[in-house]
Image (cartoon, rainbow, N blue to C red):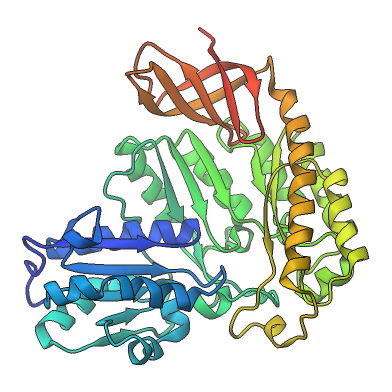
Length: 445
């Protein structure tokens, strides 16, 4: 990177508005870190900024509309400060590219998901040349060699291990906005995490659209990555998201069980539908029966592990009988939490071209029934934690109320009274009250 002026941002603030998944949250942190190279200072509101970036998401409904709407809110700020620069990054930027500049004249620059590391140069060119910039080309042929950039990592932080996706589920826009799968080298990740532990990090969450597809240049797969990080780094806790059921095998679960002292026993295993015909139309690569068998295998090898999932209702052509199979899946697999959504079409995806006979009202009704049934199940499942002892990594401490908060190995937010600051320590907590997402208890001395 050759910058003409490293002090471009001196005395200037940058504000980044973030939508979407944990990958986007991690990307935003990377953007802030990179812009520090130009001496920009992060600010907590757009009206204090000289540079505004919208880190966009294509997964939820009306993503382009949301970008238009947010940029429109900055019109007054732009009129007050003609030097204000506004840009869009993330998945909508990758999807729309130069069309965004045409449709939203207030924008100054657009950069895609593969151009994040070019952000200092993009901003440099934008200001020095006084021209609008679009940088949204995929770099499929380049190796995925990056360093985790985190300004204040705290107790727990994210680490990207892969980017992109090759699965092409018919409802999902990610392959078109994040590109083809690429993995970071194993030795880079070991070095990365060792550096983070030196900065006080106790827990990392490994990120990827499909972490199970991880394959290092040296040939190590995801199971080998987990084993190596558990053995060869001082990190205390390892989590990961998101997994694809078709790639979740016994080798991986065996490693997780062997290193359960370090690898957390919470697994997010997106099913999307409980009906095999719908799963085939989704191009998920497994049947209902195969998914149930895989979930049973996980719980057999790792008794007490906590499962969560993603579910889409109202996929094109989904009948009431097929939806009932999704409902009944909740009785088969003990999901402690679910993330559920109504289907809506995404640009470029195969399903977007299919007839979608279900009304929004029907989809909303199915979503309500699904969520209502799961709520009943989740409260019942939560009871198993009462009067048990869980291991909690403390992340926050409220001195005024003498209350500590952290996450158990099963990813439950856990609150307990404490007279001293225990941030960064793992403590034993006996659970007195258990709810689907949170636990309350007392510390065991």
